[in-house]
Length: 474
Ligand code: ATP
Ligand code: MG
Image (cartoon, rainbow, N blue to C red; front, side, top):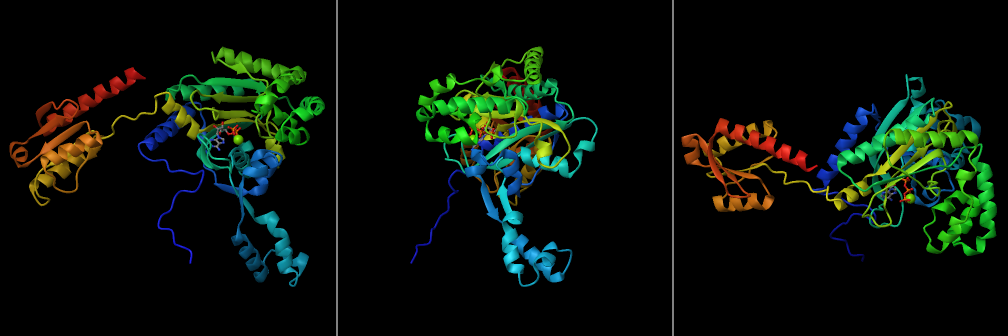
């Protein structure tokens, strides 16, 4: 008989984000809410799964994501609904088309089309789907949206690469494809990383042309690649046919010298794309944003046009891209919407958090302000006073730990110390009788006797000093 497991573990490639690291995640997300809002972006909350076809069509079926990384499943619920709709004889195209006998076979036939769902591998497709579904093109001005949440790709798990990972992304959809939009989106991104205190990030930009000039370049590239086919690895050989641009993305050591000699897109851009790229660079300079041009930056997704960009951070090994983005002017139309321009980016939150930790910006200071060391039995007035004072301190915004059971003073102070609390507040019968409490600073054991109102004032002024010190540091 199969032995029953006594414990469970998270499945391969997915993980728990535990305290205290979760505090850093909160800071990263809160800062995004704040900074993006100042650029007038608003949050959109999207479903975690969509029809498979949405990703197949937008991301592109030749991409790694769609061809091998998606978590796709059939949803049996929809089948029930179809059967029910048929039985009730409601508006049901299948009844007419197939007749009663053919129902099962017919349902089986249509299932692949109607019931394949996929855990989202990225969110731009969903944003665009929502933009079309809710006719957002009728809204005044550009539509500026941001999102955050988990994405799913079946990749080989390693540091900075997970099967459930998180992204924070933003998109601008509207009628203009002005490079000023691209530059402002990039400015927002850099301002955000700056606010988080990330240093050493590098911005790479490129233009991959448009549907006017790219096909010609791709044909040229394919031609040159065919000449060196024998020297390429299996992946690149396959991509000569399916997606030659992706060869430029290769990390294989022995292919690097070959790739360096390939034709470059910058020499094949049409006049409009050349001008767009030059203006983007002028706009970045205007904003004092440093960048490097990387002609090999093609991005893995099919829907990109013109501007592409990527940001890398130090200390992450080969998974050093913390953000990717670009322009996708044809995507809305491809998904059945009106002609619309678009640009956006997605930050890999997991990697951003790792980069902040590497940069020494991941430490969160001890979070407990006051540990209430109360002495007496639970039914004593001491405990009642401790509960009341704890509530007051919390209302003032302090983080307070109140032990649920009586503890000896030594044990209490020991625990406060282990938890990293800044202060222990000692409340015993004597303190209640005299109306003053002992506040002990745990770092240096300095003690002071304070009345209730003095206590609040002291902690508040100390809090101010703490905030001021933190600001000086950053
Ligand atoms: P990579 O080349 O590293 O595989 P990508 O081009 O597939 O990245 P995008 O689809 O552009 O990545 O997603 C944007 C960002 O999301 C990446 O720059 C990265 O920070 C993050 N990301 C992508 N895949 C993963 C993953 N499996 N685990 C963690 N973060 C990821
Ligand atoms: Mg990838």
